Image 1 (cartoon, rainbow, N blue to C red):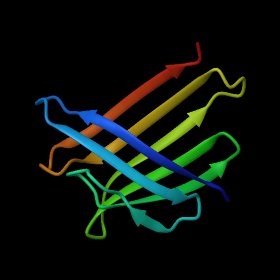
Image 2 (tube, rainbow, N blue to C red; image 1 turned 30 degrees about the vertical axis):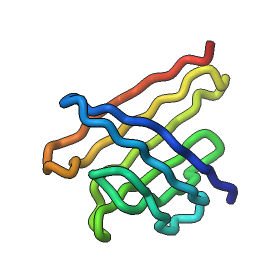
Image 3 (tube, rainbow, N blue to C red; image 1 turned 90 degrees about the horizontal axis):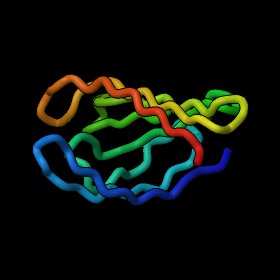
Length: 100
């Protein structure tokens, strides 16, 4: 089903920084999610040709889910995330990326 290896730097609203890394396949299996205060595993699923879903868990409990949809023309990617962070605060984000 393929997979992804990722490293990214995150800065939250309080200015706290984290470097997060993971390697995961799109097979619905939990993989290590290192460096995040919000989760210790990630699960990836390929829902269809243009849609993926990521589930972040902390000690087996679902914390956040993100659905990523690439437009049919391949020019826009929309990420919709919902759930809670490590502080128990609600997370509800929509990010839209346009190909330049």
